[in-house]
Length: 292
Image (cartoon, rainbow, N blue to C red; front, side):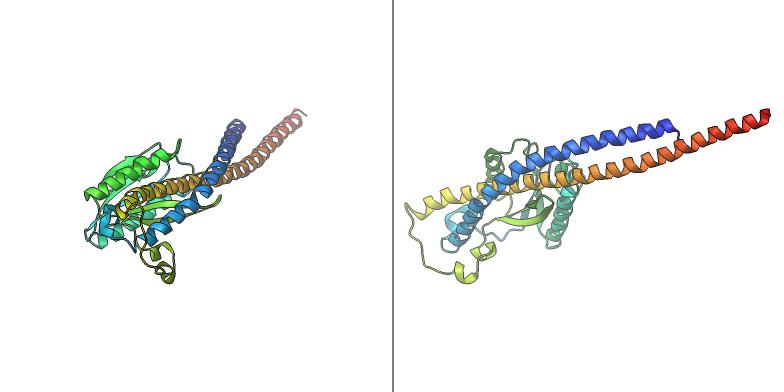
């Protein structure tokens, strides 16, 4: 039977843990509100630009810009976006499992795969695996800004143009709500026709050729790199909001579990204390009877 002192220490430890998880939940809730506002503001622009580029890619000469060119190569790069910190439930576990599954599918098709990773959790996981890591970024979500999208998007576009890889896929958590995230595998390079962006075939095929000002090449040089930067920024915002939502939900569950443990151990402590008092009373009574 444990001593009363050890039970008191255990109850105090559970209460301290409950205070920490409650504070982390409140911090995550505050960060979630800001991240949610940012992603809801960025989504319409990013989705519209994706639709425009998907529609435009059907009508332009795809050889006019290197980011539009489709290759028959066998090199695939997968951008995996995880968090830098833990204590956010299954947020990172779902990402790395989905990424590993997708990588195995690519290898089964005879493709050569490389990884680019955002976040310490994904980096630490894949460093212990057989897949090579070409590039990694950490500390991005501490102060997320559009400059991070410029850095990551610039590296990816440069390597695509150089021929380091022929296709780029990104695996990330899409923010649905404070308690729901969805793992997404999305193709970024090269741009596919508009039908692959959720537009009906009839809608994407309506209309003829466009008139360009000043010309097609200048328009694509300005618009296509901007598109990838915006999509990268949107994906980072999605992941940031999803992370805060997952952490808030995880800390809320941990706080409730700590409260249940406190009640359970407190009840056991009271029963043990009562049994100890009863035993002492019986000893006193037994001693008094012996004196008679």
